Length: 66
Image (cartoon, rainbow, N blue to C red; front, side, top):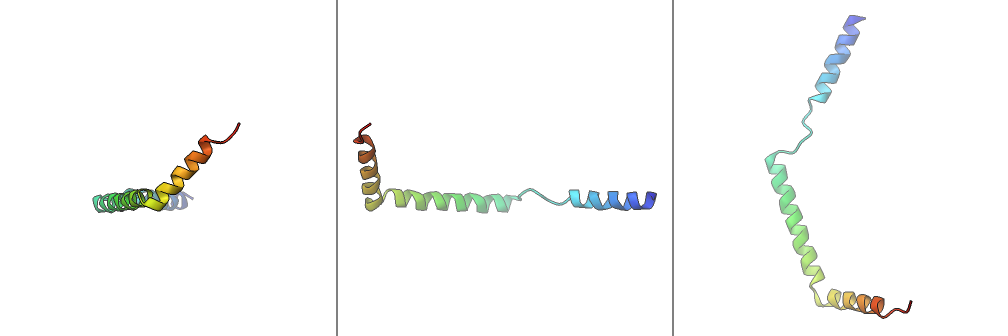
C-alpha cells in the first residue's frame, strides 16, 4: 500500500514540476507580435475609407432622435 502511495506522489511531483512559464525569447516574440498587430490596426484605422465609415457612424449616432 505504501509503495502505491509513494509511486503516486512521485508521479504527481513530476507533473507539478513542468515548466509553465515563458522564457525570455517567448516574451520577446510575444511583444514583437503585439507591436506588429498594433501597427496593422493603427494603419487600418487611419486609412481613409475606415475613417469615413467611423465618422459616418458617429454622425448617425449623434443625430439620432431620442
